[in-house]
Amino acid sequence: MAVLGLLVYPACRFVMYQSQTQEDRQLAVGTELLALTGFVAIFNWPVIEYSPEQYMLGAALLMTSLNAFEAPLMSILSKVTPPHLARGTCNAGLMATEAGTLGRAVGDFGFTFVAATLPAEHLPNVLFGT
Image (cartoon, rainbow, N blue to C red):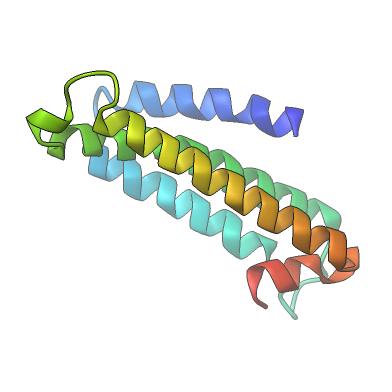
């Protein structure tokens, strides 16, 4: 987990530098495509021998790109938020951040629950639907 956390910082820095020359929508689509690539890499395809390295690389790409995906989404949200919701401490940005944190916590609990109840060789197929 620590290594995955260390991968997030450079990805977010890259998105930050790209945001100076790219539109938020383009960055959102780019990070979404990277997440889709990681998602597809995790699948156990019948034509390729499945390996732990394939799972680790797919999971790392998926997690890193989804964390970097949050930056352009929050930027887009800040541009469409009505002014009366953008004032004060308890504003729409804080609520969106808290909703994202709650979603990650529920997802982490779900993954942990499934991982604790199934054998390791069935996890990718059950979690990702192949």
